[in-house]
Length: 320
Image (cartoon, rainbow, N blue to C red; front, side):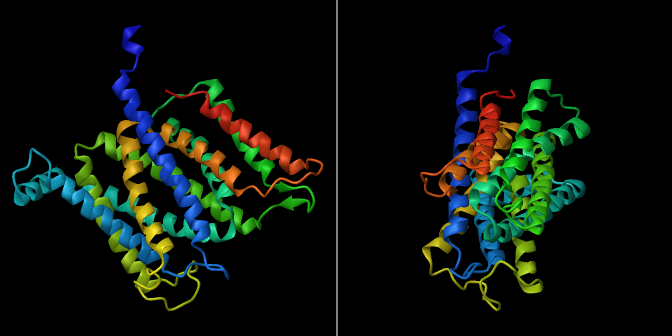
């Protein structure tokens, strides 16, 4: 029986990683709403924001790799990094960076169309897709109760988006399609990132150097080649808009969230990352809710409570 018990230090590390990710996700959800211009869009280039964040993460990761006590100087750190990498590993990591680049820009665009509570409610549904991919690709098994909880959550999310007064969804179908596409990309990234971190014989800092360098290069390239639908106006320069503290905060949070996610993958797992997103969704749903009114409860309010109960069920039934 003793073998089944998790050491206190390991459990505390997992909880700390999950709580840290929750804090950053909640901040990102709120920031993406308040940083928008009054007419919609952002006063800065979202591609440059991600490029700067990726460059910042790269600088932090390189510093951590060079400062590793097992490394004597910068050249030995470089040699050790090159010795761990192969063409196959670099291509896997680059493909992951490409998916992250696309998904980050989708996140900005969807943030203009939806409230942060709804966005993270959709992201919470990511667990079912992640579980399906893990069962099909890596042979992971889940109990019947876990599967029922995930399906129940999906049903709750569908119900909560129905507006009984207008007889259709709260947002246009196109927005739901983009959100579903983003959730699918997130699920693939989640499984693939955890697999790379845990199955390749490459130090985490070395993997992240390749990931962040690829992400920075892809976003800079996209800035010059692709028009940005999330910006408030066309023709924004690379560094335009960063005199605003909110723009700087968006970059800082995108820097921190990448590090927080990798810590969760390293010290916890993809499922605990999904549970962190569930808890984030609950908090952001509360923040996004309109002020209470003394009226008869509508079908939408009942469905919101149903979705929150589904999330609560997931949180109180850990999948360890």
